[in-house]
Image (tube, rainbow, N blue to C red; front, side, top):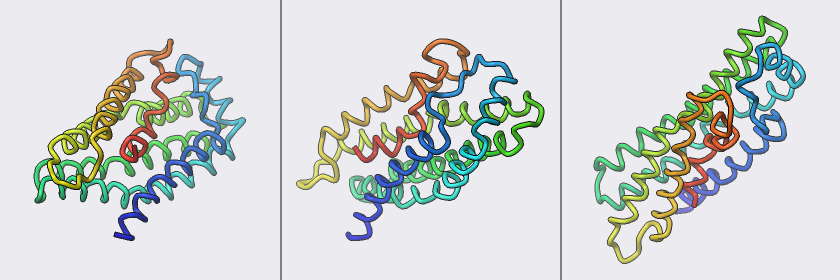
Length: 209
């Protein structure tokens, strides 16, 4: 039980750490403008190259510390099902994508800042890969939180794993996550990242309620 509490707190702490790294160290808020020219994008990476490399290095290193938190969520779903059923196994499989996805997008950002004075088109392409993954990889997230919501609603035990409001909160978060996919379509307007940019932090935040 102490280990499970530690895993829960670790997830919450990591959300805070990643926000600090993303916002204050790397300086990725506000999001980079996808309608900017390659030269403008490369210039922003050149101006913040050390900050970005440090922030992304820590994000890559720490991404997999989310694993115990997601293992705890999968275990709770398993307790609701009573066995390793479809929901709990799916939850495990989806949980694997989160730390790898986080690390992968951070690698692209680090690569863009690693040689900021290289061909601006290359820097912009790496930057696009970072933002498209970070903002737009919402499919696993939406499926994951909907599984959590369904698990909450079918939990008929006297002492449920989660309160009922937690299930409704997951549904709200799933709806909130859908606009992230719009980042693949638009270069201008709120759907190009301004509205959708928190998507990378949605999963642990929603799961922690």
